[in-house]
Amino acid sequence: MRLLLDTHALLWWADDDMRLKPSERDAIGDEDSIVWVSAASIWEISIKRRLGRIEIASGDLERELERSTFLELPIACRHAELAGSLPRHHEEPFDRMLIAQAQAEQLILVSYDPAFRDYEVSLAPTPT
Image (cartoon, rainbow, N blue to C red; front, side, top):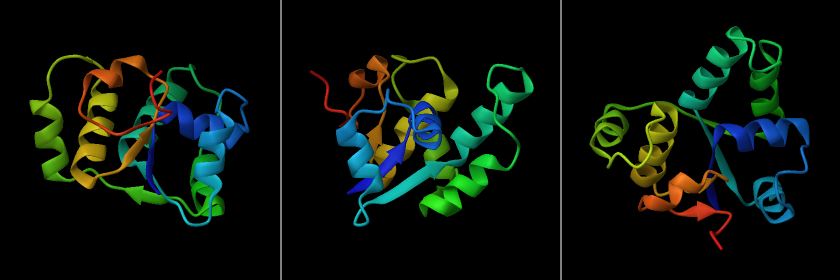
């Protein structure tokens, strides 16, 4: 399985937070899965940390990425162009970038954001 973690899914994974459903936890932890973390998520977390909205030490996420063998997904020009051309179902620029990256790279996006359902993107968990 080729997965891209939404920012909250990454944080929940790192914190062993039970809001991450067992099926997603199993998929992320599966040794056959390839799990990507977008530079957009790290950027978003860094901003929220600076604003005092997230309590996570600098460098903790980098260590978690290494420990979990997650791959870094840089923001490419094609991602930026696609994100800018997406319909305006969602105004959050970080989330729009994740949607664009998932579409461009044919990844399953692990997200619990209901606004993502309005886009043509593969999601986990599957909407009910």
